[in-house]
Length: 75
Image 1: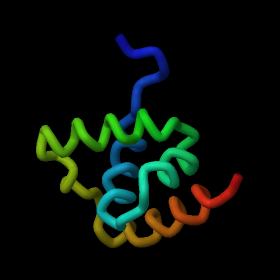
Image 2 (image 1 turned 90 degrees about the vertical axis):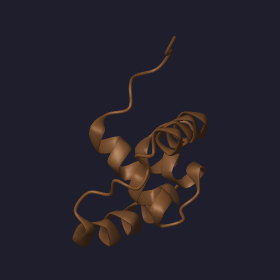
Image 3 (image 1 turned 135 degrees about the horizontal axis):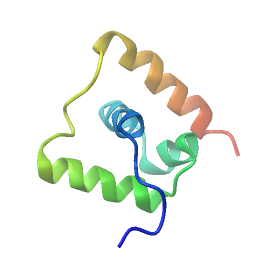
């Protein structure tokens, strides 16, 4: 049973972009305000479902990955 709020479609897309850009789960989690475990679980689920590669709007993916790196680096 889920204890926290569900991952939204936007957050799932951000996780996909971060994963494709090689950003670690902890950085993605900090940028999204989620736990590292929640992001890791969702990554594993998307890998199992083979949806991890369904990246949205490729032209914006680089900018969004940079935002994840920048926001995830803040403490």
